[in-house]
Image (cartoon, rainbow over all chains, first blue to last red; front, side, top):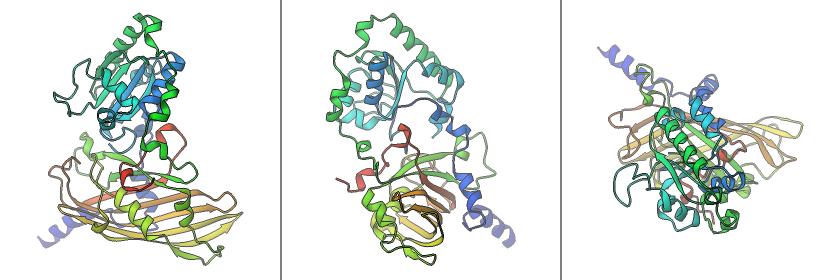
Amino acid sequence: MALLVLAFVGLAVRGQELTERNYDDIKKEVLPTAAEEEWRKIDWHATLWDGVITGQADEKPIMLFAMNGHPFGCT
Amino acid sequence: MIARRSVWTDKQVVALAKDFACCADEVWRLQNVQDPDCVFFRQWCDEGGQLNGDGEQTTRQGTYCCTPSGKFLGSCNSRDPMVMATMLRSALAKWKAMDKKARLLDYDPETKVKDINRSESKYPKDGMALKVHSRDLNREGLNPSDWRTHALNLDFCWFTKDEMLRLIPKESFTKDTAWELPADLVRRSLRLSVKDNVRGQTAAYADNQIEKAAIKCKVDKIKKGVVYFAMEGEVKLTAEGRSIEGKLRGKGAWNVGKSRFDEFEWVIAGARTGRTQYNAREDDTGRAGIGFVFTLTGDKAVDRIAPAEFGSYGWR
């Protein structure tokens, strides 16, 4: 039973220890994948008013993605 | 966050987006501030009905289409690409049916920029801006179709030019140079950026909730005017109902001639406990792995978003 508990605790905290050896692996695990970065392919402006300026200049309608916290920052 | 991935990566949505001037923004400010862009938003945002329930202070999160002149074209709040594509097509049809004169403002919107006060205007062009990605580590065993299993968030961490220059020693470098990063900058960067926001926004830690925050540097090599150095440190933050701690390692490459970092990176791996009101941890409050990666930002507009806790930077 004690071994089982130890194994469970070990699993729960696995991956926390950062060493020179696993540095790149952890970095890769945290950073977004190519699929997670696909949204960047849209030619976004970072503010509503930049969208208005571009829409006015290019005679295009505006599409605004609005969230609590900037959608391209912490939200 | 999930909305970035679920809708804006869909091929038909991406194709439709080419017909729009696409932008993103923080909605609380748009709802509550008197700057011209915020007033502009409030003139039409509810014309398709409130997207998240009734009430003046109810969030207006969602996607909206309008003309530069401020005429409403459509809105929705959905993670379903089909719903989004339908709304965009409808908005485009309304735009095309509209008289050309009615689509545009009768003044140059550039003239209002000086009246718009927002954190992004403080972007440190001659300093250093870092992206901060956060993700749960090693969550195997959870349901892979559950977005929370692979949730990811992004924040930013800024340094003015003066602050950036304080990150390197004043004396000339040798291959044995070692130093500690300034405590005030390390404490600010870590307490404001290292937080459990993997599944959603959360409050930062206060300075008096820092138990450990220190980073030591040591030169690895000097080559062609660039000083390559390694960083090691740790962080431990504790507040009521939550904590986070981890080891930090990193690397930097200081270009002496250009007075800038060619590379600057921190990786933190550790554990978190607890939850906050809005970070969607729900009952997942036990000790579990979490990781953060700080890297230099790119130069697109989407890389110049202000840190979520910019108000705590104390910049004037």
